[in-house]
Image (cartoon, rainbow, N blue to C red):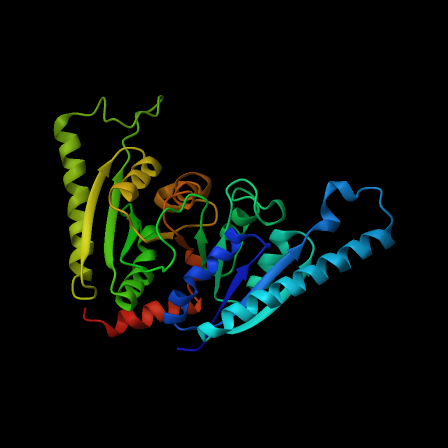
Length: 315
């Protein structure tokens, strides 16, 4: 497998630097290089309106110089991990600049606030755009992560499934991660029973026999997936849940803590046939880091590594 590069956006806060806790993991996965990137957005903020071009240019140069010094300092702390480190200072709109920088990398590793963050970056804006539109997978440390990141050890990997080919796109990567780290896989299927017209998820209006058949089918599906994976990873657990997908997945992660969630999502439609702004977004606000994959990224080196490992594993 060829070498892989990860992009780490930084904004000068300790929270953005918490992404460094996951660098030993990506090193173990075969990454040999990281690019630390900072974006100076000063030219695009409303408080610059009316300022002369010369003043704006001076502000941009000062911002660039500050970010350059900051990123170089952070690079010195990362190199002892055995990773090659480059720094990339950019000026412009954060999302656009990050997406452009990501074209040359295999993974974006980002830690973000839910409300403020990188130069007013917000999980619902810049980081969300990055997750939706990046040409590579995105590993997100959200604002509500509760698991211990120091040291970070992956012992359980959660994979939400809904029976669709889209959701199953996450399985090869999750399996590869489990093989590499020795983690167990936690396969969870949430059956959302929606009553037309009121959106209730409690099963009201369904016959007992129908509910039983639906639950049995979901459990049988999970058992079939687990059977295919039993010779590839040490432990595969399955869980069928009933209710609203986002709520049930977060509750499950609190009751059975995972150290990483792996989601397959379209940029728009999302995991479990929901928009990224609903189920997957709920997961990004959950208690564990989340690796978001999209089918259009099938040519990424992460996907290639996972598929190669899958082909080499017992059928």
